[in-house]
Length: 61
Image 1 (cartoon, helix red, strand yellow):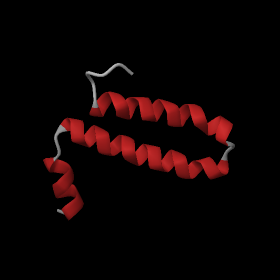
Image 2: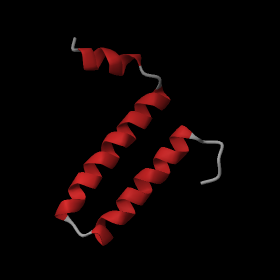
Image 3: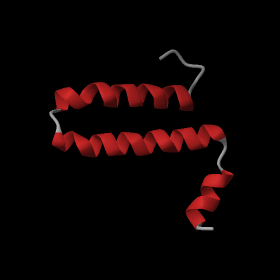
C-alpha cells in the first residue's frame, strides 16, 4: 500500500471531498490555458461553490 493510499483511506468523507474539489479546481485552472477565461469561468465558479459548501455548509452561498 502506498503512503498516499494510506492517507486517502484515513480521510473523513468531508476531507476526501475537499481534497477532490481542490484537485479538480487546480486541474481546471491549469486547463484554462487551453481555453479562454470566459469559457473556463463557469466550471471554476461551480467548483468554487462546491468547495464552499463542503468546507462551510452552514453559511449561505
